[in-house]
Amino acid sequence: MLPRSRRTVRSDCLFAEVCARLPLFEGLAEDTIADLSASGFGRGFLTASLRARLRKAGVQDLGHLARSSPDAITGIRKFGPVRLERVRSVILDALARRLPDARARHAADATRARRLGRLRDMPVGCLPLDPGALAALGLEGGTCAGIADRSRLDLLGGGATPGEVDRIVAALAHVLGAGETVAPRATEAGPDAPEPDAAARRAALRAEQDRDWEAAAPAGARGRDHPDGAQTSASARVRVAGRARAPAAPEADPPRRKGRRIRVTAG
Image 1 (cartoon, rainbow, N blue to C red):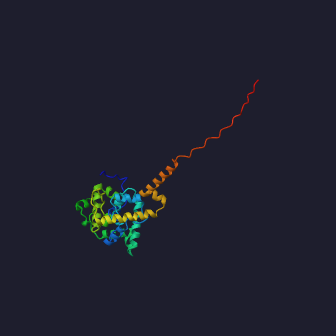
Image 2: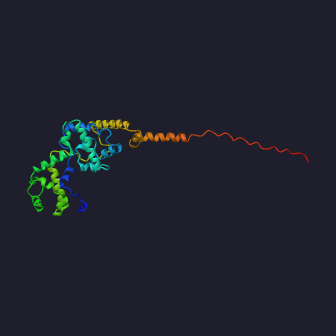
Image 3: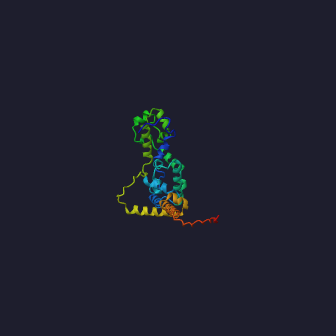
């Protein structure tokens, strides 16, 4: 990996980079994840093309999104920071319908404050890093929160290399996310791969939910986004074209003009 220049690197604190490597939501029970997964991607949340992009990247449902890291989600094409916040909002709404304290516990600010509080309780010595290297950078002593509050630019200016800063971020994410399950970036399975019965049932349920959502969508949007809608639109065009190519009725012969009769008389 090529080292990043001081002009292009982010200047915010390392804590933001650490949180970007952790799950979007933490502390969710397995039955809550199962409920999110059973709802697929919800209704009216994403277009068919965006759902296809997520599934191609290995993301199958809201439960998978909830356990994915922001870095993993924004690494998918068409899913930038704005759409990431939309994903967070939709999942939080779904959690609020199931858990009475979901908004207070799982809002973005509450999650960040909880993680920062855990870092304040962790001494620097708990990081899986060389103490000598930390001392050389002036990071010995104190707590992990103090390191997380430093910016990448600050550390690079103090003599750290980009690789050393990356290792510090990875170590902070490791100790902070201990016990949390981060959804891996699954690869698309081959056509001959066997599909478990449970996965097949979930896929059939999601397909049925997608059909219900497409049926409720406006006709114009359905024709643009859904393959069935595109087929219908194309067949309609063929029918129209067929009418345009229908043979026209033969035209009647034009009326003949009567010519003058010239009388010839003998001279």
